[in-house]
Image (cartoon, rainbow, N blue to C red; front, top):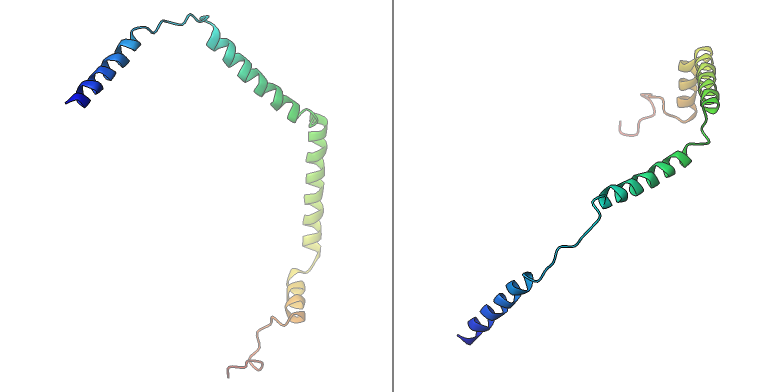
Length: 104
């Protein structure tokens, strides 16, 4: 039974120590200041990341991509795709033929 008394005394001592806790006085704007600092640092990092990609450079990149696509489209239409594929398949032995099977 002494262990129960010891435990009860320790519990009472713990609860009594909670009565001595005092309120901490903090500036009412502490949270606002902290959040402002956190978000201002994130904005600075983001702005530094894309500063080199100016609108003029964006336009130049867009023109380059469109030009490459037009060139690829012209090349694709001018080449004979089916004959190129059949030549490729023939050179690597990928054509189906009935006489070259080993199973029959």
